[in-house]
Amino acid sequence: MSDEIDVDNEEDPTEELLNLKSRIEELENELMYANAEIANTRQRAARDRSEAIKFGGSSLIRRILPMLDSLDKAIHSSEENDSKSIIEGVRMSLIGIKSSLELEGITAINAQGKTFDPTCMEAIATVPTLKGKKSGTVVDVIEQGYMYHERVLRASRVIVYEGEDEE
Image 1 (cartoon, rainbow, N blue to C red):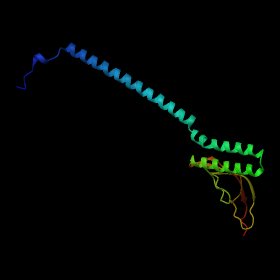
Image 2: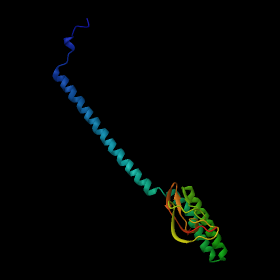
Image 3: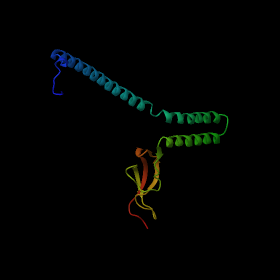
Image 4: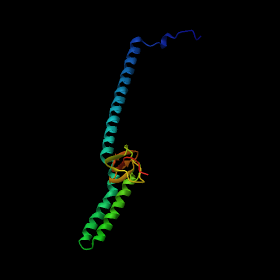
């Protein structure tokens, strides 16, 4: 008797239309809430990115602050002691600053005596190649260069041997 149609269970077309309109309204509300949530998520992500950029260096700054204190102490102690204490204080602070930078991924570019590399070095002068030296070799580093992970933060400014290699 599955072929029989139960006439009593059929809904009135108007009632079915009202149910469909109600369901459409529910779905439109869900869509509106979903769109609002997406907009809020985008705003939150933009705010988080902005804060990350603004405060991203705070761990480095926290590591460097003790070195500033050490330099300050070295200056104040120099008023009472000899210059050896200043030199030692500055040397210790320099070691601490370099260590802090390395922990953040900032490393010095080792250029002295290396072959000139234009991707991380800037030749500011050249000198004639000396006997036993190879043309294109860095003679002197005028300003230390630094890498930030794999990127050049500041190129090393160097003086390079140029000319014929003398044997």
